[in-house]
Image (tube, rainbow, N blue to C red):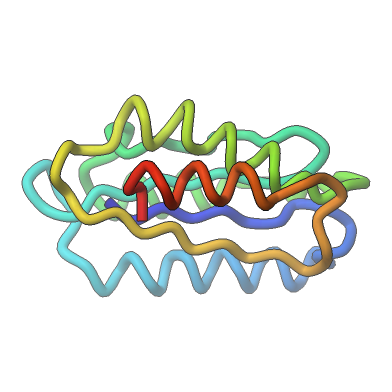
Length: 130
């Protein structure tokens, strides 16, 4: 299970946001994606985290590419990475990740978090999500 979180705040300029999304697509394009292969999830960071798609939403790269290509730069005023990690764990890892599958989360941020990240990061690590 391969997860991504991308900063959608104003710290991440629009061109950098677009470059990060291209990198996300480039990374998952190197994996076999499918029902019995790699599952991919994507969320955006900002004032409030937003799930773009979870691990069960798409089973092929063309659908994921379309979802990524249709994203609009949010331009949030904050980077709430702690909220993002907690939300990701609750709404993606805990509900749509496959039991026993290796889990990886790649986070792209352009600045320091505006909230506390130690506890949410530790909870994910300690619960074997990575």
